[in-house]
Image 1 (tube, helix red, strand yellow):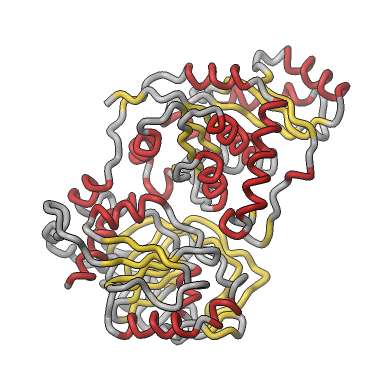
Image 2 (tube, rainbow, N blue to C red; image 1 turned 180 degrees about the horizontal axis):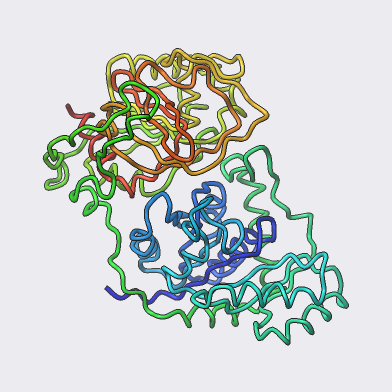
Length: 486
């Protein structure tokens, strides 16, 4: 179908240039004007998407060509932007930076081309004047399929500095659509994994987002940005639908043979399971099993499509807060614990003994439990000395080393999420270490960029450091809900 929503991609030459400032401020400003703004983030980052949600009142959605495949970028965008007046897409890293060693894959430039969207380049001009023209010219001419429709100059020091920058850019042919002065007073705080999530500083975050909107209002040609967004051509794409995805089965994720030198017995291919029957709730109005999803300040990392897929598979999704709630939601038949910052709240999580015991009891019963990264740590015996749920015979601690990057993985054995041999792509992002890093039955065999096993599969538990995007593997949601009613 033809999707004609106006859209912009906010990109930059490098990280730290001000993409989040401009994208979030523009989203908030336009939303305050009464426009329905669809927020998107290139790449796997959850935190920026949280600020986008706060700015627009709509779910911040990720567009990741590595995790989901290039074929899903357009459909997922169209799903999020349905019924909106405008879409703003914040890029990742530098405009042409993507998955290491894989060309343009997962870069902002690739996503802009897939969406046929004009790009606004945010440039940190704090240490340059005339050289800015050479920089912008280089980015604009590097790939003729990427349309850079304007530039926003960030961290400009003075009126004279602005004049020099504008004079230089007059020769580049790329219009200046904004000039932002230094304003440290509304900078968003960071820590070991990036910005502090919205859920941890709600009141301050609201103030920051308002401040960013005001900066954009004062410093940017908002009408020029809107005109550029409206110049985007129609996009011919099928709109992604969670129900259709679940009914279609496993999507691009498929069982596949693993190289014989994978490094561990049991890391091998197998034939796929027979296609399961559609779960109850897909055809009728039956109330499905309760799937509890961890939320609150300690567990803020989740893609919006995960809950949508669980509901489409027939689940009744109920969010709970492990920092506050002493019981799992009534009737819990399955548990999903995503990513976040349990290391920041280890003492509080440890102090909630009733909930820790309830989670352990649920896991012992064989009920489906899917845990990613923070969820993995929460299921461990301890985290930095604080008691956790004790589901896994492992202990976690903070580390100086950042583990970061895309991964290609294979399911080592059958689990509540995948059949043995299933291949998918994921992302690791943590500064913690779990000892041991894998159980007797690991969750995944990582085959690229390094070869190792990691995670735990025991009874109904699937726990791993690997973040995955279920839109690329709707069969995972379907399989999980089926196990909840088995």
